[in-house]
Image 1 (cartoon, rainbow, N blue to C red):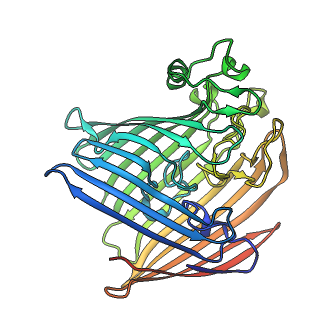
Image 2: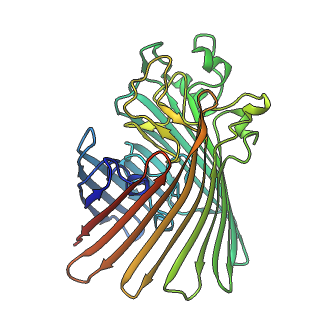
Length: 417
C-alpha cells in the first residue's frame, strides 16, 4: 500500500486498529502472510501461521505480526505464539467489539487455551471460556511483564431467532523488574493473588496491599441478537472496570454502546453499525469518589500499551515518545467520548466501506484538556476483487479538527494463492 497525505501524519482510521500494519506516519506498508493446515483426524487440525510486514516511519520497520501454532478440535482451541484478533463486522467497529483488546497494537506472544465453540449445557444454554498467559516483550518501564487473561461467558438461545450473550473478561499485568521496586512478586503464590485479584501482603508494593497484586483490567459484555423481517440486529454494551468501583458499576455509563444491523436481501448495504463510546465518568471523580485513570498504572507505568500503542480502545491517547519516569505517564487523554457510524455494502463487484466518527478528548482528571479537542474522523474504502489479478483497493481518509486537519489517499494491491 502507498499513502499520500497532506501532513506528516495519516488520518486516524488509516492506521488505527490495523495491528500496526500501517504506522501513523507511514507512506508505504507491505505485508506477507501465510498459513498451513494439517488434518490430524476428521475433527482436529493443526495450523501454523506467519505474517511479516514492513512500513516506514516507525521505530521497527520490519516486524512479525502473526507467528503461531494452533491446535483445534470440536470443543478446544489452543494457540501458541502471536496471533492477531479475528475481525468482527467487517472492521466497522471502533474496538472490534473488545474494549480492552481492539487490534490497535501488534499481536502479543503467549499461550491461549479456549473453547472452540460454546459448550452446550442444554439445548438453549452454552458456555464460552478461555484462559491465557502472555509476555509483554517490548521496551517497557517495567521489564519482562507477564499478562494473565481469562474470560467466561454464557449464551442463551431463545426459539432459534434470538440469543443473549453475557461475558466477563479479565486481564492482569504482573511480575517483571521495576527500576523503582526491583523484582516484583512472580511466584505461584503471587499468581494466585493475581488470578483472584486479591490484595498483596505487607511485603508487596503499597498499591498492591491497598488494591490487588498487579495491574488489573476487565470488562462486562452483554449482547442481544434477534432476527426480524427486515434483517438481523445485534444490540450490545461493553462496560470496563479497573477496580472495585468499576466492577460495582460506579463508572456508568462508561464503555461502548452499539447496534449492528444486517439488512435482509440487500446487496447495496450489507451492514450498518452505530456506536456511542464514553470514558468520561471513571468512577465519578467529579462527585468526590475515587477516580480511575483508564489504561494507566503507578507501578506498571507503561500502562495498557504494547510498543507504545494502546492495546484497547484506540481513542485513548498515549505518547509513545514520552520518556516514562516515576512521576510521568504515557497516557495523555483517557477521558474521551465518540459517536461512530460504520456502513458497508457492494455495487455489483465493487465492495465499499465507510466509517465516520466524531470524537472529543478531555484529557485526564489530573490534567484536563479545556476546552475539549474535537475531531471528525472519516474513512472510505473501495475494493475491486478480480478472479485472476488479485484485489485492487482505494482508500481515502480525512480528519477535520480545529487543532489540525489532514487528508490522505491510498492505493492498495493484494494477491493471494
